[in-house]
Image (cartoon, rainbow, N blue to C red; front, top):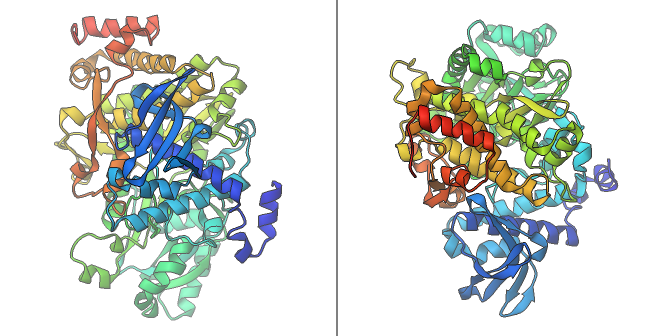
Length: 635
C-alpha cells in the first residue's frame, strides 16, 4: 500500500471522501479526459479539428468554438480507422486569445451544440463527467501500479488494477447513485472483498431457473454450504415462516440499503422478503460493477446482482430483467452444447463460462402499476456464472483482456510488459493473441451466425509463459446475438435472434472488435515503439486470411460478408449515448442501437494489403482464398 492509500485508509469517512481531490492531480485527470473527448468525438465526426501544419511525426491542430470564443490547440497523429492519437501534454486552451485552464466540464458545456446535448440531458451528463473525474483522481492517488508489477499480479489484482473503463465511451464509468461513502465500498478499483446480503423470497413472487440438473437446493448447498442453509431455514422457522415457501437469494449490499429495503418495504413487512444476513464468503466487485467474484472460494461461481445506478448511460437502472432471467440458463445451455461439438473451437481452446442459474422477484405493485417493460421491474434479481478458475491448467493464469489496453501512470503499457516477459517478439505475441481471440470470434460468426460482445471486459485471457493461449467468453445470454431469423431453433433461443441488413451485419466485428478494441491496442503498441500500427493490422489480416483458407466450406459467406471489404459503416457509440444517456439500448427496438456517420476505411482491406501493410504469408493465404474459393475480386 502506497503512502496516499495508507493515509486515506485511516482517515474518517468525512475526510476520506475528498482527500484525493488535490489541485495538480485534478488538473491532470481533466487533461486526460479532455484528450479522450477530443479524440473520440473527433473520431465520430462530432468535432472537426482543423489542421494547422506539421510538427515532426505529429501535426498541429486547432479545435474552435467561435460562439464561445474558445479554441484548443494540440498535437496529434491520425492513425488508421481515423484514430486521433492526441498528445495530452500538448493541449492548450485559449479564451478570447488568452490562456485558460483545461477543464473537462467546461469542455462539454462549450461544445454542447455540436455534441447535440439537449438541455434536459445536460445535468445528468455533467454529473457523469464529474463522477468520472472524481474516480480518476481517486485511482491516480491510490493505484500507482507500474505495468511491470501488474503484469505479474494475480487475476483479481489485475481486475481491480484497471483504471480506464471502456476505451471508446467518453462517459464510461460514472456510476451515478454511488455516494462518496459507497465508492470505496463497491467500485471495483477501490473496494476490497466484502460480504453480500442474503434474503429469503416468497416462492409466490419469485422464480428460480437453473440448467438441467441444477435446482435451487443443489445450488444453495454448493454456494452456501449445508450448515448455512440449515441456519437460514431455522431462522425462517423461528420467525413463524415455513422454510419450504421460500427461495434464498443474494442481493447487492448497495441495492439492499438503497432500493429494496424502501421500494419493497411492503413486501418485507408482509414477510414475502425476509432478511437473513451477510454472507460468510467474501466477494470482490468486478469491472462489470454488478458482478462479484468469490474471493474466499474462487472455484465457486460469480454472483451478478441487480444494481439501480446509472452507469455508462446504459439504462436507468443496471438491473436484470425477470424475462431475461427466465431464459438465461436455457440459452447458455443451448450455446454450450452447440459449441462443444465444434472441433475447431475445441482445438483452439475457446471456452465459455455459462450463466447456470437465475432468480428474480416480481414486486406485485410495480407489475400492476406499470403495464410496459420498465427498469423499475428489474431491481431484484441475480444470476450465478461459472468461475474461470476451474478452467485453467498447470502453468496457466487468468487476466482480463481489458488489461491489454492498460497504461500505468508513467505511460507504460501492460501489453508491452507482457511481451517483454514472454521472451517472444511482438509480432509472434500478437499472432498468438489473435489466434486465441480473433479466430474463434470469426468462426462463431461464419459457422453459426453468432456474434458476442467481445470487448475487453467480456473476455478473459488464459496465459501461459505470459502469452495468450486461449480465451474465456462471458456475458452470453444478455449480449450474444444470432444473426438470422431463428428458423429451427428452440423458441427460447429465438429471443436472441436478429436479422440485420448485409451492410451492417459485420458490425459486431468491424465496430466491437476493430473500432472499439483493436484501434486502441494498435495505437498503444505503435506509440510506444512496440509494434508499428500497419504491421499490427497486417497480423489481423493474416489471422483472418489463415482462418478463411482453412475453412473453404464457408466460402459463400466469406464473399457475402467480407471482412476484407474496402470500408464499413462508422458506428458511433458516443452519438448513441449523447442521444439518450439514460437508455443506451432499447431491447425492444435493436435498430435504435446504431448511430452512423459515413464510413471508415478498413485497415485489412485488399487495398491495405496491396499497399504493403501485411506479410507475404498473409498475401498468399488471401490470394488463395480469392482465386480458389470466392473467385477473383476487383475492388
